[in-house]
Every structure is written in structure tokens, then in C-alpha cells.
Length: 240
Image 1 (spheres, helix red, strand yellow):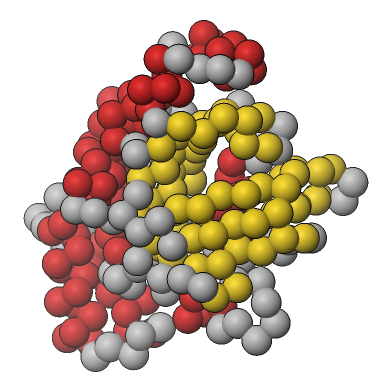
Image 2 (cartoon, rainbow, N blue to C red; image 1 turned 30 degrees about the vertical axis):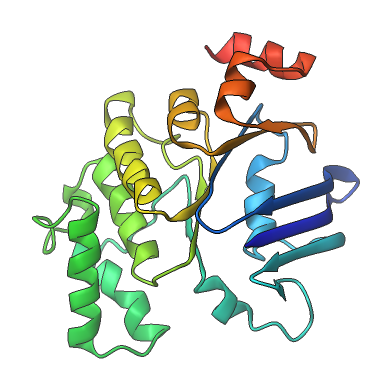
């Protein structure tokens, strides 16, 4: 599981995360919603040690991510992350993009890495795009390529940072369908999202962030059907 305790994060004098306590057990899908600037994406960056923290702890399967001596590269193999921008290597085909990390990080042979890449691209519905370059893919296909690249490392957890926010509206559905597939297969996922229908339909729990704190966390039915927090009520009124 992922265990977060007393997490504090500052950017200079700006207090971004204020004592976050959160546990995400294996197999859970947690969606994080809230206004821009509420600390949602920063939390994912702290989980993956892409940002330093000022206090508290983040533990993945009992290992303190931010402790001195932690092999962060080994830890990140457990934590697949998909960003808002897909950032594929333009000079490599889809197959080569996905095969790169298994070869470099995991030491797989070229043939092994290509087999893994082909399997993962098929998994996300890009089995017919193995030899296509990113520039010939739609935005939704490029984001699914990014998901395949993360899955190629065989992570135990997936972190999604508003994976659909940079897409045209007509392309959002295909990426959300891929995320739903992973959820159905039992992948543990933390999804920062502004797609309320996805959060409602796919999540086991939904956390509402407001000004650096988890103001409310509950089942989707309770978050969307019976919100307690006045801030959450206002937020939902504006996004529905």
C-alpha cells in the first residue's frame, strides 16, 4: 500500500500541502478532485519523489520514499506515472518508445524489450501502431502510448496526473477507457482528474482537495450525492 503521513510541502513561503494523511491499499482506485492550485498534482510528485518534502513521510510497501538510502530508481519501477503531456521520443517508433525503459532500466535484451512493448501497446489498443512514429498518432493515441510506456515497467501502482487535460474533447474518451480497463484489472491507481464522470464511475474513493488539505474523502456516491463540505458543494456546482 501507499501510506502518507503528516506530509508537508512548501514552494518557498507557499504552503502547498498541509499535513496530508492518506492510505491507498492495493487494488484501490482513488480519484483526487479539486480546484487548480489545491495541491493535487503536487501530491503525486511527492509520492514519486519528483518533489522533495519538508515534513512527514511517504511509504510505498513499507519503504520510506524520501528517506536517505532509499533506492529511488528501484522505487520508481513500482510507481508508473502518466503526465499531462506525453513527451514521446519523436525519432522512435511507438514500439521503440515503449521498449526503451525495459532495456535501459531493467536490462532486458532487445528482443525481450520489444516483446514487452508489443504486449503493452496491444493492451492499450495500439497493437496496429507498433511501427508508427508519434507525430502520426492522435493526441489520445499518444497518451495511450505514454500509458503503455509506464506499464512496460510492470509497476504495482499507477499515478495519473490529469492524463486527459491536454486532449481535445473528442479524444478524452479513448484514454479514459484505457484507464477503466486498468481499474477493472485490479491496478492500484491514484488519479488526479477533472473528469467527474470517471471519478464517479471508476473510483473506490474520491478525495476532494481544498487549499492543500483533504477536505473530504469518501465513496463516489457520498462525495457526489451527499457532499458535506461547503467548499465541495460549491466545487461540484461549478463543474457539473
